[in-house]
Length: 71
Image (cartoon, rainbow, N blue to C red; front, side, top):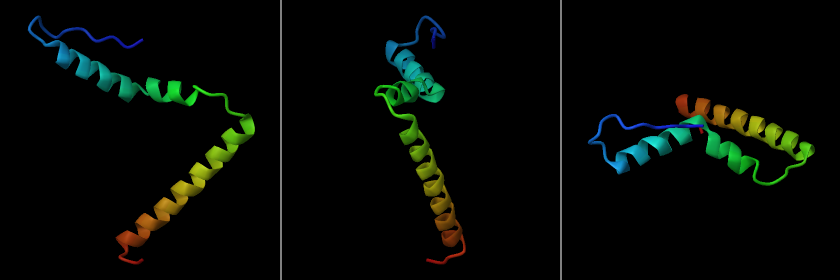
């Protein structure tokens, strides 16, 4: 569980809330909760992973071309 305490007695609740939301986003708790919101078959999980690998490879090739100033 993520906990945020006040740095000093004068810290506003807006700053506290901002620090809390930043910590939640950095920890990835929300992303995991959204991912597990609906049941996903194991086959579709593997498909999703393979598609992500292919997508990352294509992205890397595109970035290399841009660095070499090719289109």
